[in-house]
Image (cartoon, helix red, strand yellow):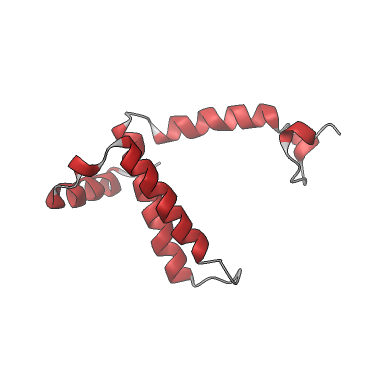
Length: 108
């Protein structure tokens, strides 16, 4: 999912600043939420957000997500695949196709 060169760049960036000491799971989870809020802010008043701002904030969210997964010794690809399986059972294609209905109301 993430190339080795990207992961190496992230690790080097963190190491150069001695920031790993601050990367507890709770701090990283908070950072994901904070950066996600900043991403959402790009769309606060207009769906046509500035693409450069979106790219920057999305990169921050993704970086913190990868750091959190690594800190918890989780494989990002595997946890996504696992979650897709769970979600697939909650939202069967024949019931959910073209609908944004919450899973517990799909049969209504």
